[in-house]
Amino acid sequence: MFTGKRPTNDMFHDGWNLHNYAKMSLPDSVVEVVDPILLREVEETSLDASSNKSDIGIQKILQCLTSIIKIGVSCCVELPRERMEISNVVTELHRIRDILIRTRRRGQHEIIGLPEGIYI
Image 1 (cartoon, helix red, strand yellow):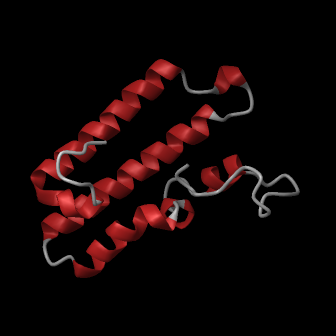
Image 2 (cartoon, rainbow, N blue to C red):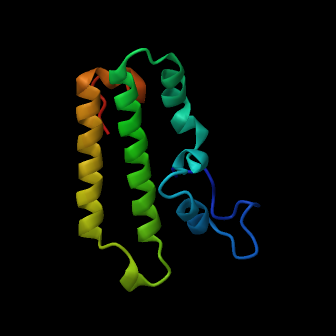
């Protein structure tokens, strides 16, 4: 969902799959695998960012995207016993949501491009 790629995408062959694609991006190249539609607002804002506050908001969003990709990768490990437990997934997703909400409340609403009153 976050990469915009389907597991059946033509780019995945010869042992290359969506899991490997997302995993190889961690931790420093998530921007390269995240669906460009998700990044459009962040990229436009970063070009126009005139304040340190905007830069901080952008960095928080990118950190959250990295965390989400990490969760997705850990939930898709081949061996079930090595996968992240669902209670930990829920805890991490709540933490990410809280970070995004705090970022939004600090005047970063325009960065994440959500209509007023809509929360992640």
